[in-house]
Amino acid sequence: MPRLPTAINLHKASKTLALTYAPGEVYHLPAEFLRVHSPSAEVQGHGNPILQVGKINVGLAGLEPAGHYALKLIFDDGHDSGLFTWEYLEQLCLRQQALWEDYLEALRLAGKSRDPQESVVKLML
Image (tube, helix red, strand yellow):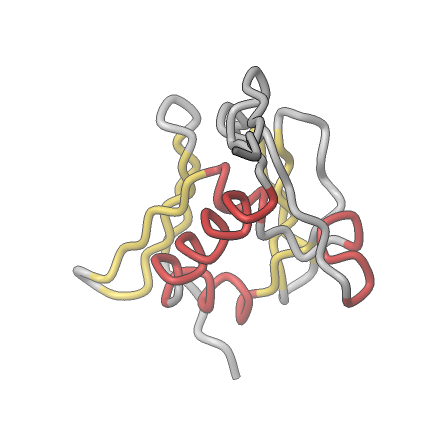
């Protein structure tokens, strides 16, 4: 059975979701991190994940419970189709650093950017 957070706080100004599991065990997940790791088919691509780019400015507009098993996160870029199960949220908390590093490396390899206003050009010299 997945662990359930004892508190969930949406911080719109800092664009983070704070999940508390126990005293002193608080995780702050940035909206951009959650958006690029959404469990939705739009992001996960039915088994072939689609690299999300240009999401540095995305924020969380809200959240809703999805039964007793998940949260529906509503992003201010209109994305709202991913259901973040309690188990998936806990894994994002525990693996945040490694997942973020993997994402940044995938962007680098693809020649893409977190910034929607930036284009990366590779010069072949």
